[in-house]
Image (cartoon, rainbow, N blue to C red; front, side, top):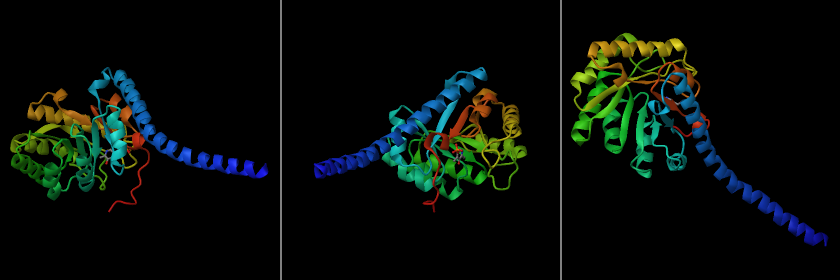
Length: 265
Ligand SMILES: *Cc1c(COP(=O)(O)O)cnc(C)c1O
């Protein structure tokens, strides 16, 4: 009797241990889809507070360091815009995932990697982080040689003045925007992007600086402001950014959970 009970109990224990493991894996994946839903809800509320509709704000799910399986989970939930900021990583993931994903390369791009990025990711939707003439020229040449449609790019502006940040100074944004618009026929100047303060909770003045840059670019290049995206706002500050007029937020950890960089070269 005791022996029988023991066997039953240990059998149940095994189940108790093995079942939750697989359930946990499923729960971890759907947690990302749930987190995305919650972010989309917060985005639509912030958009409303800024007098806009939620479809006027693009949410880029920043999937760097996260496995393709998690991206697939959000793809299956209907999301299409994903952001990566390591060339090697996007080159590995893009072929594993559906080709109607709209990939955003976000942050600084080394000019010598422009060609492999454009060549390896046919469904590259936008480069958010053109911060010098050389990378613009290399992207332009790569697009020309592949004969693909013009590539949308945003000029990255260093609005916080931190040395650790890439991006042109606000005073230089018009010049780089001009270069892209008039010297790079295979690129489409689509707006401006900034990161802001190091702790990823940008101060309003950083965002205001990007808004001012857009005003100058619009005026100097004679492009309507509403044809220029403002990519600002991340996990810690996307609602504030939207309230200030952001049209494109890049949200990583709030959707995918904290990142582990230990495997990054
Ligand atoms: C990683 C990254 C993000 C996302 O940051 P979270 O704080 O995780 O939302 C946004 N923009 C750039 C350029 C990034 O590199």
